[in-house]
Image (cartoon, rainbow, N blue to C red; front, side, top):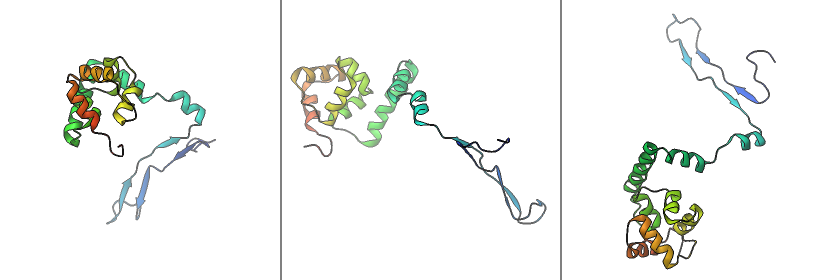
Length: 154
């Protein structure tokens, strides 16, 4: 392939589009810049080898104290901006915790926390106590939050 010619797995756009005559001294004529970019089309097996799960990126970010603090503040702001007040999810976010962080404090797994928040899991008294301890609240608040089922759950 010659230089500048896209390979079969690349696509390219022009860098400049001319409007009117190319003589910049002519009235009403201007050069309109555009973006130039190349898109690499990756085969599925290459994607699998090069991707990183979001949970790994989040875990890496939360291992850095400054980033963990910023994420906690963002979760609290999210609750304030959205008005999300009910449920275990609301309590968790107001505490600035991720599902993984709450799971760690409870001694359980992130999928278990996700099922509790979604209302897909019956919660026993031991789990309610662990939730209360991890979220810094009492059992009555956890009970009230569990009674506020997510939309669509009854």
